[in-house]
Image 1 (spheres, helix red, strand yellow):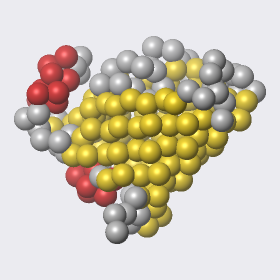
Image 2 (tube, rainbow, N blue to C red):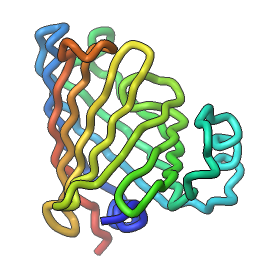
Image 3 (spheres, rainbow, N blue to C red):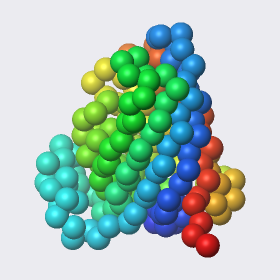
Length: 180
């Protein structure tokens, strides 16, 4: 699989059900989300601004391919401050390909920490997308794979920044919303 194929196959509206285990809080969490993924043009102003603000050295060694916007709205059964609070947000993600099966992703907002992030990605032989992001206080390792055209799975492990301890694990199944 290539990043272009992955983004094209991921585009659309998804209903996600995620189970998470926070080892730090000794808490299980169930999260229901609506996720929308849409491809955007390389010439989009937000894409250009993200690339200009990026700290990636040697961007010229990589090819900007298939940028996309991801939006989410999530409801959790465990919110420490307000159980009725809904979490939502969006981010721009710009893949920079190194070769057919690997490269970097620049994210306007990260997965584990709410800051811009640069991730390393690669595809396994079976088409599984793997992503590793080093944040200031943690390391996120994610895997996404397609079970069928309209069903995909996602798992993540959040480690301490030194990589020595596991803070959180999660698994999500995601089903594409199909318009009748």
